[in-house]
Image 1 (spheres, rainbow, N blue to C red):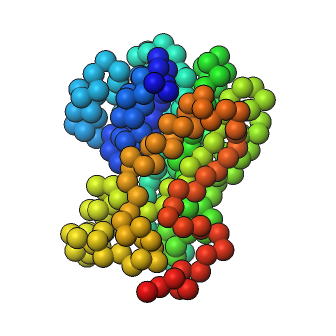
Image 2: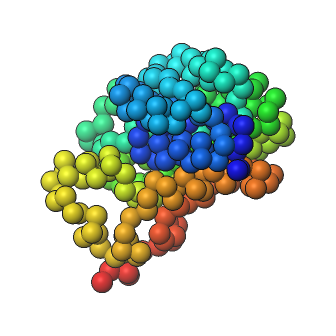
Length: 259
């Protein structure tokens, strides 16, 4: 097992990609702090399924005191921290015209500021264990869509954080890397698109330009890469940002691929 006897914090792990990462961590021998905002029922059900290898902590990452509480909860539950996965994020629409300062500030607080200060709070424990950090970004960090402006900016900041700390913390034995998922079919994404007026079977009707494999990526496929980043198999690599999409993001013109 790749993570035997390790303690891993996975934020935003009561559902979606975070849940898939947490499940895979436990399957690889780790203990996991499950974190969510207010999804107590989901979190408790997941912890019951994972057994003694999981503990639950609910907290709002927009609260500046949340990082310290999350780190304290992991230590209280398991006594050590051997890895941190910053997965939790606000995913919502917003463009230049309709984004308010309050809306923008919450994106930055949860998607960019919280990961930084979680790393800061975890630093003494990660330095002791030589544990890695994996940030979950987005391919939207490179530009993003018109209606994903604040989200894209927040993920761009996270990517800069990863590259900066991937250099500076590596000198202290802590690897910091990032995966940028593309379009992933989570339960939340399924419902979000239906709320926007799409039919229930919309995942089967995506143009091949955006789904060359004729299906979307699964949370479990993202999780498998995260486990590799967390494990010793990833070696000394730090500061890496890997795009997990079905096609190259940079330099691609999707109009040339429409069928």
